[in-house]
Amino acid sequence: MPLPSSPVLSYRDDFSFHNSPTAIRRFPFPFTEDSYLYSVNIEPATSRDPGSIYEHGFDIDEHYRSEMAERALVLDKDPRRYLVMPHMQVAAWDALQMLMEHLAADYPQWFSLARDGDRWHWRNRLLEINQHFVFGDATSLPCEPLEFIGRQVQGDFALLDQRDGDLYMDAGLITGPADWSLAFDAGMSFKQWHAPVPMAHQMGVFERALKYLLNLRAGQPVRRLNWTLTINPRLDSSPETFHEWGADRGQITAQNVGQQVHLRVELQVMARLPRSNAVMFSIRTYLISMDELVTQPGWGCRLHRVLRDLPDPIADYKGMTRYRHTLVEWLSQFDPQA
Image (cartoon, rainbow, N blue to C red; front, side):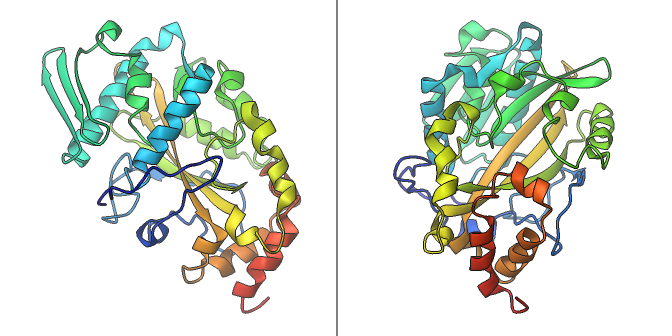
């Protein structure tokens, strides 16, 4: 999609972030039924639906500059949002190569990559970056490879080391998490970092997902959607900043619910990295306010039914218990059967 020369919008303070009509139409509304339960819901990450978030491997949209400004702000304030353990250096270069190749192939008007052996030349016209470097030599970049490319791609990235029949979060660049922390989860296994999720373990969801990911092949990435709700268009809702956003959940009223409550959807892409055999787990977050969401036919009605009937443990885990009733009541005006 064209990238307008709009001003950089904010995901904090005055929360100037908003979606254009085009961004609203291409928002990945995650519900295909009037009810919701956990599921693996993994599909091949193949290109489809031109103009949609599924057209390219890594979606670049109108919020690119805004997200990159937000990432730089978070990293400058809290360097712990970036971590690469020593044994994950090869995986970090793997990730840099995959991201650069995809961006240069999918968006040649904005990104280019030229290679002469290990001597690479990367250009990012959106951020005015023109970088010559030696692949594999971190000293030839202004910062470490995962941080260098991560500051230029929308979404968060975790690199998972596969060993002992599990996946371990041993590297990542996470500046916009939905209430989890890279610093806390670092070194944890797939089973450990999913331990707080209610109901899904009893349903065997994570056991099936782990088995699937352990057999993931290079060149055959997969994707899934995940969702939650957040107050204000705040990308960084990490435990480290809970003091900044935790109280927001108690301030929702019938008058402000449409503007302040946002549906937060993650497009999660999992790809095997060829040299290191690590799995790159990308988390691309999309935000939409309730006021924006209900402009799309059927979305308000369906979300009303999903949230009305959502099991309490899931609602509590997703942090919406304090304002759920207010939101469901507000959404009921869009459900003809309410």
